[in-house]
Amino acid sequence: MQQRQLGKTSLHLSAIGIGAMSFTDFYGKTSEAESHRVLTAALDLGVNHIDTANVYGGGLSETVIGSFLAKQGAQKTRLFHIATKAGIAVDKAIGRRYFDNSSAYLQAELDASLTRLGLDYIDLYYIHRRDADTPIEEVTETLAAMVKSGKIGAFGFSEIAPTSLYRAAAIHDVAAVQSEYSLSVRSPEMGLVQATATLGTSLVAFSPVGRSLLTDKPHSPKTAAASPWLKSNPRFIEPNLSANIEATAGFRRLAAEFGMSAAALAIAWLLHKGRHIIPIPGTRSANHLRQHCEGAAKSLTADDIARIETVLPIGWAHGDRYSDGQWVGPEKYC
Image 1 (cartoon, rainbow, N blue to C red):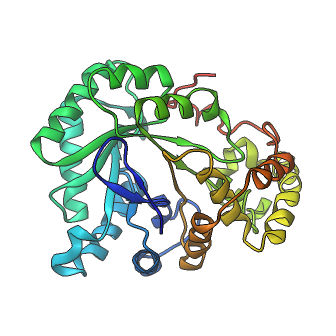
Image 2 (cartoon, one colour):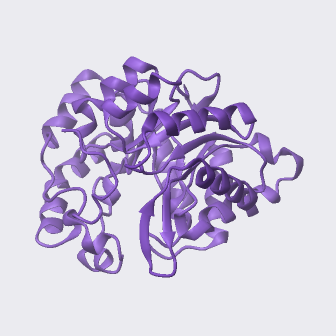
C-alpha cells in the first residue's frame, strides 16, 4: 500500500483509510464482529488510517475500534493512525443538535473519546463542525495547546471553506481538512483542493464512492428509503435516485472494461487528483475494503482520466448533495 504524508507532519498514512461511521448502523445493520473483520483485513492490506468521531453511533464507532485494539495487546498503539472528531453536540433532553467549539467541550470530548478507544493519545483530532460563535483563530489556539499537551499529534477541520482554512493556518499548521470529494461531488476543486495544496494540508476525502452511486451496486430506492439519513438526501429521493443510477451506468461499464470494480476506479481517480488527497471510504465489508485497495494500486494515464471525466463530467448528479437540514454546519464557499 502506497503512503501519503499527513500535512507537514512526519506521519505517513496509507493512501486510503477507513471511514468508521460504517461501524455503526448508519448505512445499514452491522456488528462488532463484522467491523473487527474489516479492521483485521485492513492490517493485512496495509491500511493504517482509521477515521471516526464521537457522535458516530453515540460513541459506538470508537468503542468498537477500542475493543479491537484491546485484543492486540502491547502493540495496539502501533497498528493504526487514528483520527476522531468533536464539535457536534446533542442536547439529549430535547433531542436538539448544536455545535460547540469551546475549549472545555473539546477537552472533555477528547478525554471521552480516548477512554472509548482505550488510548492516551491520537494522531489527528478534527473540529467536526464550526461553531459560528467561536472564532476559528480561538479554536486553533485551543487545538495547538492540545498538541503541546501530548494528547494529540495534529489537528484538522471538517467541511470548512478555504477562507477559514487560511485564517486557521495563519495561527498554526493545519494537518488536514476533511471534505466530501468524489466524481459526484467536485466542489472542492473550486478552491479547497488548491488551498490545501498551497498550505501543505492534507485533503481527507470522505464518501469517495458517492455513498454507493459510484459502486457496482448503488443503493436501490428500497434500501435508500430504509436509511433515516439517505431517505431525506436529495440524491437518494426519487426521481433523482433512478436518474443517478442511470447516469452512472456508463461508469460501471468503463470500470469493467478496466478490469476493476466501479468503487476501485472511483478511488483511483480521486488519488490521481493530487498527492495530498487521502480518501477514507467507509465499508461494513472486508471484501469491499479489498476493492478499495485495488483502486489505490491502480495507475491511471491522462487518457484514462479523460475517459472517466467524459463518462461522468462535472455536474452530472441529480439533486443537491445535502438537504436543507443536512446543510446546517458545513461551510458553503462556491
